Structure formats: C-alpha cells, structure tokens
Length: 221
Image (cartoon, rainbow, N blue to C red; front, side, top):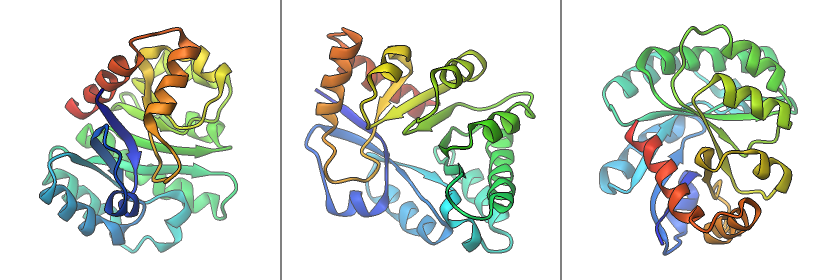
C-alpha cells in the first residue's frame, strides 16, 4: 500500500522514515527553514514543500518576509504555502492576523494550495476567507473545529482535512474524498494505523487507495 504523509516537518523527515510512505509534504514554520527545505526538495523528488510563517513564530517574521516568500514561490511552481494560520492560545493575535493575511494574499495571487493551522480561531479564519472572491485549495491540518464549521468549509471552499487524531464523530461527518493523513512530524504516529481506523469508521475497505489519491490530487494542483 502506498501512503503520502500530508503534513510533516523538517526534523522528522531528517531523522525518521516509514516504509509505506512514498511521498511527504513538508511544511516550513518560519523563514529560517525555507532554504533548508528548498535544499531537501532539490535532493529528494519525493519531498514536496509548503513555505510560510506559522502563527507560533509571527514575532520572528523579519521585515520584507512576504516579498521573499512571493519570490520563492514564483520561482518554484510546485511550492505551496504553509504552515500558516491563527492560534487562540498564542499571543499577539493582531500580529498573527496580519501575517496570516499577507500570506493568504500571496497564495491567492499565485493560486497555491494553503496548509492551514487553526486552533480556537475558526470564527476569525472564516471571516478572513469570506473576504476573498476566489481561493486556492486549502488543507485544514489537524482539524479541531465543530461539525458545523466542517460543513461550512466543505460547502464553501475547495478544502481537504489532514488528520492524525481519531475523532470518530468528525471522521464520520467528513466525506472520504476530503480526507488525508499526516504525521505532523511526530515519531509515534503510524499512518497505516490511522488509515485502518478511518476505514473502520467510514466502513470503506478502499480507504487506503482513496486517501492516497486525495493527496495526490493536492500535489497535482
């Protein structure tokens, strides 16, 4: 069986490997990782990259970061945007929103898939998303919102849900063609185990193949 890790991080890829994982999407969390990730992608055709400033690190964003991000993405057609978003439990929400919106503007202009981090701030995220006439594909990483928010996102946006936690109610409410799986750079997450549990919850014996194709579609975008 073939698996794509839909959301990982640099340190995990450097030191860990699961035999079934044939491709990995690695998300940079701050500008200091951009060059390292670019080099990793150059050396390994099975690593795909998303570049951005994570909400935990917005205070580290240097003047002109968005110009450097724009230039990096414009020079590399396969590069995506992420991990970006908002986190209620981290400080400086105003700065988080500013940095997030600057990166969303770039993703929209260049039509690049966005890997979205959101903790306790879906009201703010939805308000921001409504301000755009057209959006690229979005991957909601480790989605933790309500089923109402889930349905709103599915109804209005080209969105996928990248999972590593098993929440039977949320998985049951999520169409199988909207599901991907991820390690989030954690050593203790075995992706085949996650897929097997999703298969049982969804009563879908072909879950492995469907989830693989779902993630492949994101890469093809």
